[in-house]
Image (cartoon, rainbow, N blue to C red; front, top):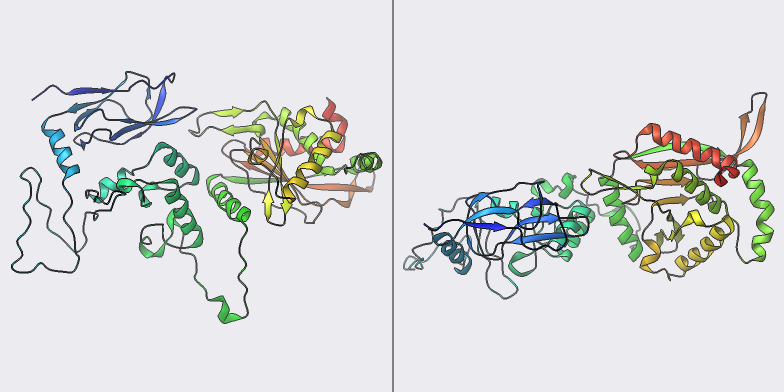
Length: 456
């Protein structure tokens, strides 16, 4: 028998100490040439390492989580008989299956190659998956169900996309060549899950349960209870709905509530509205909220951070791009005010007016809604006393603001009327604990009560 071949990490550019995030084969597996062996992920890219030739895996030399560079040993590969076996499995078309139809008595079973093991006896529950047609019309060889589940056939970008949406790729059926899972397959799977249907391309899970281990969505004939109207959701509502669902189930949300005394700040705002109106825009409380939030973010930088995908590191961002939720007829959008720390309140108010108009006129560009580090959702112009805003991943916090109201506040001698602004801060509990959130909202409230603090 020939000596085993050492399969090493090839030239992967300037990347070093890249983490192994997936091991796609195990000892004893018969593999084909160009079959993916492992998946590596750096801070810039995800890449799969293919096998240089067919064979049988003799021994794995690394494991999940290892850090590797060019030249690192992946596995030992036996060529020869193992390669022939792998090629035979690939090239031999799977026999056509016709369930519930017995062969004719005179039918002669097709001859099988000597090197291919005979198929196991059928049972009521088959352990094999029937062949799937490829893009070229050639059937994809059958494989044991457990092997298919352990090795979903997808590119690194599709794997990353699925991880971001929390989708288990073993439950998605691919529509690409050789059953390869495409981006569209993952999207269709999520759509079916949110709509309460079966996963795209496959039957519903046992018991009618949806993916993500949720109970099946109730099916109700609403028309039998009274008049109904079907109203189509806007494109923005559909897109934001999927993102909100992902953020809600992926991030452990906690909301800290507080109130800020903005009596003097509101008086200051009103005293300057005439000047800004001459310039063609309104001086809103939201401009002051952005300025105060930046001051608080500088004091508590973990609120301006992002959690690394691995969960091991926190990325502290030293720039301050504030997302602002804008209500439009088609749904909520969140354009970003960039470098808010470098702009005065008048500049922020003018930019808010401009970007809000673009949002309502449907003229926002994709770049206008990217790169945010912290978001503010203000419902003050509508009403309410508090709410729980959903964090906009990859951010770790979002500030919700409700309508201010005049309230009696004890000043040490008597109750005095003060204008109080309700604050609702939702935060990612993996990054921020309750004590830090309480300190953040308390500090933010103090800045709003005396805006001169934003100059310090």
